[in-house]
Length: 243
Image 1 (tube, rainbow, N blue to C red):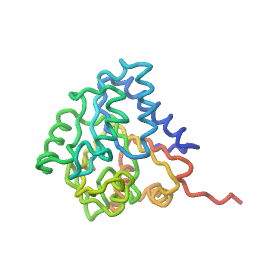
Image 2 (tube, one colour; image 1 turned 90 degrees about the vertical axis):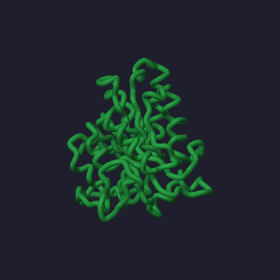
Image 3 (tube, rainbow, N blue to C red; image 1 turned 45 degrees about the vertical axis):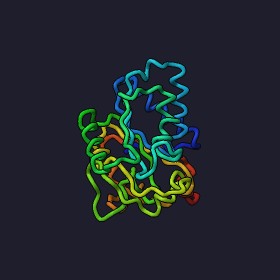
Image 4 (spheres, rainbow, N blue to C red; image 1 turned 180 degrees about the vertical axis):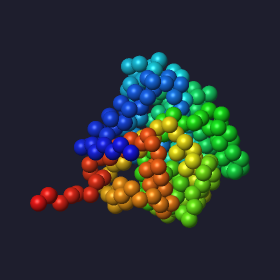
């Protein structure tokens, strides 16, 4: 795993944007898996500005949504769908045929997972997967548990996940999560994980220990051969001055 420590969230976002643009230039048909939440927001905004400069670069880009809150209307402003439409899909003018995402309120959640898995199996593997680090070490809605799921599945949301700012905005809380599984993520050709915020110092320390445990799903990224981890300096524990 390559680990880069950046001085600010802005610097982290610019670095992430540059990496994504570099990969799109290598493969204009890139399948990009996109996380939501605070960590990638500025990166997506910078990609939107890049689109204004060179829209043809994004013409063949394909996007798959990493996860979604379940049991919430699709048009709710706090869904992952609303977030991605606002911050990425619309700014990059990604067509419906180039976008795959969970329905946040499907009639049959199990069938929805099967549909997304079938689409990923046809379109994949993921070329570049953008991730954030959950406060309890989760990746997408792969929560700490006795065992982890390989593929798209319905996830029981932890109390920590339900405290996420996106969920806290909802009067009716999500009943479950819909998410790509650990194998889907780890089969990605390249993974870019973005970590920012002083509130994550404890979990960052555990993650960087390199110890692999299903109680910290993100730790499985240490098994992948092509991971870039961008960490804002503020998310690192302050080190004592050397003697």
